[in-house]
Length: 499
Image (cartoon, rainbow, N blue to C red; front, side):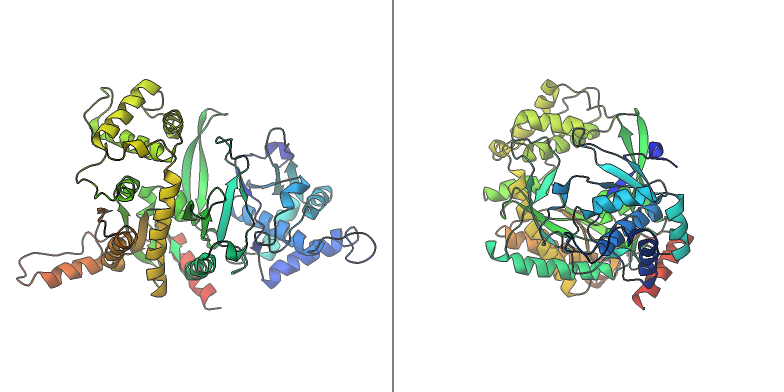
């Protein structure tokens, strides 16, 4: 393999927190350090040295490469080659990883351990590095697993304050992490403790998909450059479960959603197959949450019925397709600063073969206008950048739901306004979701959607049916056949917990 074969799209970002306390990991680092680095990067002597020793920073680089190789031998790591990229403060970079890794990476290439594909600031492409045959030979020798290559618990910050690199440029996707002190916002310490307890619970919980023999979900995507569908992989590994709360635009009143966890990056058809501690699960979500929250801000109980059903306007699609488009367009309108950006964002979000991808602004405007006519009480709040404020509310609601179950030592997975629990807690989840909304929005009731039924709900129905006139069965409780790979991962996780 040479640098020419490195696919920029098949990469993952450099992880400042990648770590291992395994003796085999330390032995691997020592072997490379003593033979190839110690003489060039002395720990003592003249000259300025980084706060964190070179050897420790080399260890983080090597573990990043090992992690990528375990996922896919072709996968690379994206690393910045500018010194400014390593100026993160201690809150977000507790190991003090510095620009010294640039020299370490260059020496790894010089000593023949990695392939490299250089990026540039002009193209905004980061350099890609990948373990080559020489280094992967050592990886095979030291036999580390995903369980050995995890973030050291408690070291990574769980409460993030962020902003766009250039606030005026709404097209940029790059965000910066902003330093703060805990006294800037009174609830910070409580929020951090809560998220850390939640992560500790996720850390010891086995979360997987039993039908998968290998621990990843294939995610097809359209490559504009190659003009064909390609595949990304979402990995269901121990080091892909870390969750944090992110506040936006350097403002503690905006955002605050829970981000992280591989379950947030897969589609609904895959999510319904998730098992938690070898039990099937049920997912429930608030129906039209942000539409309902807009009504809540106006202190109006939302109207009943389908929020997104309008008269059939588009002749070339089915009513079901149109409803889906209206829903997507409404959500874009909630989050956009103006109508033009809402329509453009909707179009860009569509799949390559979607019938809505090439719709003109005029036709999309017709759908949006029809939605506004259906909801005149909140029409003025659309395309007004209200979404980021609503995310703060749904973040608070989700925090209440998470805290309830974490205190009971019951794992729950969140996808912003939807929640996944083991199937024997589905009834309790429904109750807590209703209570959390009512508490946050002065008694508001929001319809909750649920597919399937949990064992606790069936038992509750049986208890209420004193006449025994109804036949309650457990046939609707989801279950899936366990693959051999899943069984092995479950066994490995159990062994790891008992070490």
